[in-house]
Length: 280
Length: 280
Figure (tube, each protein chain N blue to C red):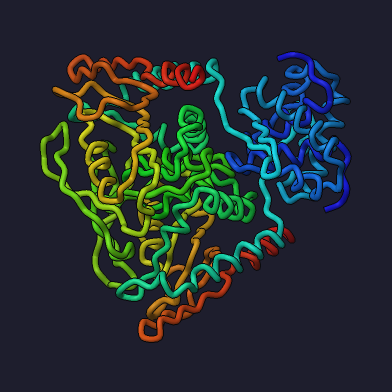
């Protein structure tokens, strides 16, 4: 790559850092890439760090020492997150979402990659320091959110299925009781899709009584995984006791009235959790 | 936002453009954002354009006139694409992928958001000028690729399912014949997940005889959609005639020998299609 001036370096480095979240990049990589002095690269990084922080792109952490370097950690601004949460609550309260049985149609939200990426960055902010090795989500509607978070944490995604497919090799299955319908169901995960002992973030789009999530936690025990966190886009008032209590949610459906078609949605605990992570 | 110097503007604009692919952004947006003169912003964009083009980030198109502005179009470099294709072929030839029935395990590839994003950018390059309105893919393994392409084209994703779920509202279903197993199966798409008359890119992870893809095309007729393109990650020699002939593939499985455990994988037609799009 040809020698670049500061202006060119800033554009290229910004792109490079954004494409490599959570990766520790040695200063030597940049000095070689640009044939520039270490002091110039350090100054570039100072400029990028300031903009990333003031514009809510994320943090630029520098690690000192021989094995040191720089690491871009995606972080969402509290004000941006608040706007997003409020917007989502408003969207969810639209009466036209109401489906028979009191279900809410959500694919217009889940179907937008840009929206999913915004949520992905939000969850990646909260779980940035949990040393996550892998995301585990459940087919099919957890998948878009799982990949969006996986992009910002730069970790692989494993998908729990409710059916068996021949193209997965040997699988581990469990039976679990769906929290709201109380029916016994099966879920399975391909043996080779998750290394034993992984530090896992469990993700789903929707949680009511928590049956699916607690099923996933049980299934993960078979992989000797450690559940380092649980993230759901939308939670709803469960019928009776909730099976899972430590989780992060973006929005919370408080009431769905099929007669009046009234839907009441309030912010989930995300903003509180974001504050807590920051003050740790 | 406070007034920024060139160095700060370059970092912020690079980030902003990368987060808004295919969106036409007026120069006025940037001059207001930075309280800077139009001439300064134009110079900034010239610098970014040069780096984006020389570093293979993509094209920066300027549209003149009152409703004009600048648009970032993600584009992959041919050399980067070649490296990726070769790497994928090599990975796919690993004997350990072989599953009973001659299937290949691919979740280690499909499970990596970064890999999916690379492929997503590649497909977004080839289909950049096709005026795509929506991606349509099939649950569950087409979903990661569908969202990755959707991110770079900034379009929503609709998911065809092989089961019925109550949380989708009214659906349109068709029966189709699976090309390789010759069994009759059902697939369905929620009525409200795709506007009528959309210009659609059909995406899947794997195509053998093309039964699933041609089923999707038939299903899309019910939505009066126009199929503007078909993209598959991996194609395989079909048993007999292939049902779909105009598609873009990254890799092609030529042979799977269950006895010798030999797998032979060659590049798909992606690089040829990329050349063709560029010379249009």
